Image 1 (tube, rainbow, N blue to C red):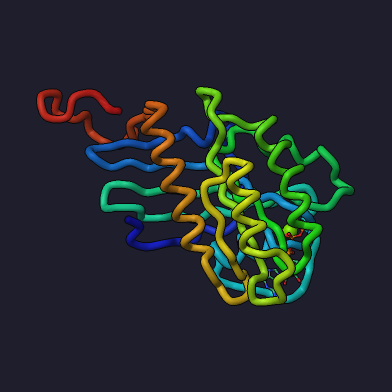
Image 2 (cartoon, rainbow, N blue to C red; image 1 turned 90 degrees about the vertical axis):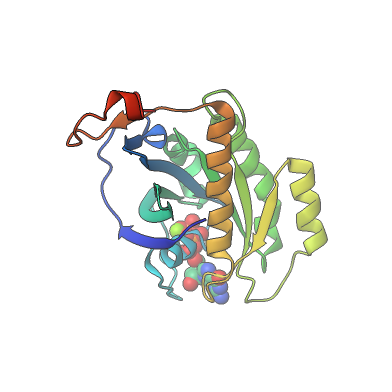
Length: 228
Ligand SMILES: Nc1nc2c(ncn2[C@@H]2O[C@H](COP(=O)(O)OP(=O)(O)OP(=O)(O)O)[C@@H](O)[C@H]2O)c(=O)[nH]1
Ligand SMILES: [Mg+2]
């Protein structure tokens, strides 16, 4: 279970290797870096959700995202595991067309977001989902874990729970959450769910890519064996 959250804010991308598989491992401690996508139509609240989750802030002003933005959230998942979430907030406006799909590369999970007060944004979910499934898979070819977020649940509701559940069932999406970036509703729970899915997918797929921290003295062979 997660013990504490810490925010690192925005930063520039430094590594060109497969970021999401990156694990630092030393004497029983592991540090993961997971790339998560946040996608959906313009104005549904993707940036607001990311900002609320990483900075704990909300603004009523709409500032369109150009291309993509990203933020980091660090989770002390358990006493031995630290998780750095790289949240990629992809522009939803049509004017960016398929240009933004370059940012999908190496993602290990995604949050699909719609605005529960605007039914048209829910109708678009199918398009975003198909596009995502076509372009991103886990290293073994399996679908990446996805969570559906029905955002702005503090406003009026134009899509019923039945419609959302039906869509999830038909689309093989395991979970959805009614969220509000404004009121900070269900965002932690949804992200927690997604990280758990990523961790269990990694175990099932046997992904054990890691390196040992350089400053660590070599572990005693008989006690620790080689790094995982
Ligand atoms: N009431 C309410 N307003 C919200 C919520 N989330 C976002 N908003 C507002 O909706 C507007 C659009 O939010 P953004 O987060 O910028 O939308 P976006 O999905 O990032 O849009 P693009 O960057 O164009 O793709 C802003 O005015 C936000 O303040 C919410 O949960 N409740
Ligand atoms: Mg945005």
